[in-house]
Every structure is written in C-alpha cells, then in structure tokens.
Length: 408
Image (cartoon, helix red, strand yellow):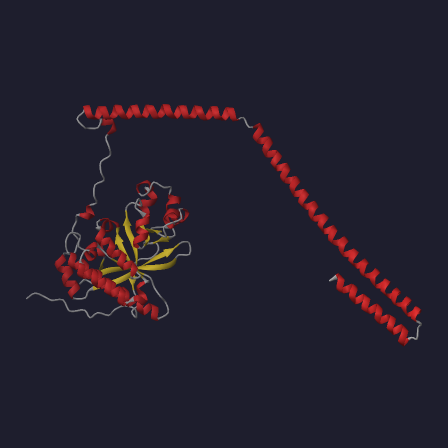
C-alpha cells in the first residue's frame, strides 16, 4: 500500500514538471527544480503521517503490555499468598487428628460388631425370640376400609348402571403458587333415588365385582375422550385423569378395547392420563406392566395416586410413562418419615430428575399449602382447592336415563 502511494507521488511530480514546462513556459531546469520541490514536500508530508500512525500504534502496544504486566503481578501476588498459606499449614497435626478419628471409628465399629454378635447369640439361645427390651414394632394394621363393603351393594350398582345413573364430575389439580389448573380428575358419582350423589367409595366394589369396575372405567374413558375432543374443538384443550385399575388391565378384552380407543383418538390421546392407585400398581405382573407401555406408546400418560410411601423406583415409573405421583397432604406433613428417607425439601427435586411431579391431595387449609410450597411440592388438590363439580353441558355425553324397574 505504501509503495502505491510513492508511485502516485512520482506520477504527480512528473505531471507538475510537464505542466510547468509546457503550461508556464519554464525552462527545463526550472521545471525540474519545481517537480523535485513538489515531490520532496509530498514525501515529507507522507512520512510525517506514517510516523504519527506508528507512534499511536506503539503507545497502544505499550499500554496493553502494561495491563498484562499488572495482571501478572496481581496473579503472582495471589499465588504467593496461597503458597505462604500452604507453607503455614501444619499438616502434621491434621494428620494426627485424622489418624485419631480413624482409630476411634475402628474401635466403635469393633464394639458394634461385638454387640451384634452377642445379640445374635442371645437370640439363638432364647429359641429365636427377641429380648423384651428389643421387641420390634408390630406391623401396621390394615385399614378397616379395605374390608368394609361399600354402602351400595353390587346388585343396586348394576341396576343403577343399567339405568344410566352414573355421572362423571371433575376435580381440579392446580399448580402452586399461581393455583392455575393443569388438569382435572374424572370422578365417577352415582345419582341416588333421593336426589343426592354417592361418591366412589360408597359404591365401588372392593372385593369382587371386577365386571362392574371394568364397566365404570370403560364409561369413564368414553366420557374423557368426548370431553377432550369437544374441549379441543372449542379452542380450550383440557387434561383429564381417568381412573384405571387392575380389573381392566388384567382383562385382555378390556385391555384391547382401551388400546383401540386410544389409537382411534390420537388427536386427544396426549390429553389423557390414567390414574392408577399404588396398591393396584404393586399388584401388576410384568406382563401387565408391558400393557401400560403400550398405552404410553399410544400417547397416554399415567399418574400414581394414593401413594402411602414414596420409596419406589422412580426410574421404573418414568420408563412406564408416569408423570405424577400423589399422596395425602396431611399424612405427609404430619409423618414425613413414613413416606421417605429424604428431607421433605429434597424429595420433590429428586422426583423431578425423572420428570415426575409430586402432587399433594386432600389439602384442607392455607397453612398446608404454604408448607407444601416450601417443600417444593408444585401440584395440589383437595377441598381447599376445589371440590368435584359437574362438567359443562356442551362437553359431556347426554345419556337417556331409564326409569327404575319396580318389582311387582
């Protein structure tokens, strides 16, 4: 670039000489002197500008070097301080302390082993019975609810189903702290002759009656598909939790019907989640769990409800397609040790590692909400949030109700 500038100066000098000789009628010597003077002045100005640029570039380089030297000096000072701190550390005393702690730990471990050996020997000498002061706590007595028959007998329930007196209400599941509904439980309720509504615990069979349970769950799935389709068409998609039990999963015909329904309604399958009680899930065989995998491949999700303990395999639940696990809020807050060995504030983040949200049910007041939110529980449900209520009339299936058959 600099060479081109000098070439231009030389050409300009020749131009000045020619102009002076031909245009101003200078003599050849005068034209030559004039051209040399012009060229000298141009070169001097050019060199002066280049010199200024070089000085500015050198000043910037010196400033950068000064900053680097300052940074190196600070780093050297910090390194010197750390080296001095390490040199001042009394490693010998620390090693002596560690050796003493290890020695104490070894003594405690040996004493514990001796105590366990004595305990086992005393147990064998007593014929296998535990000493009176070390009696283990008795197993928890099963709840009476597991044995008491429902208030409505199976015959009456069957007649009510034939008369289309089963209705489905929805109960919201909200997120904290906004309390925005993220889904709704589809709750079956039975219309009684007196005009009231019976809840599921009052009529759902507990021992036997699998055909009635399958029938109710089939109606719930049909209702959920209809609600999801109509809600999506109206521009307000809804997420529904549909009840599902082992009675349906273990029956091949019912299982195929559910799978066919999901495949035929792929547009809304992602809006459906099956709610399975923890005892029902524990009773599933490996073959029946593979059926859940087929549901998940079809697009449906799962929710584990009624959990009495959170000590389960989260990885297995994630693989099967479970997205939420529910437990009773009062029991969790009053006796957290019966649910988990984690701290209450750590169990929710641990579950989120497997993309599973914990949901507290049966919330009764604001204090429980605050305690659950402090523990990281993001989903809640219960009477304080909202009770089960009817679905909008334009979303549900209108079934004609047959008159009650009276005996002659």
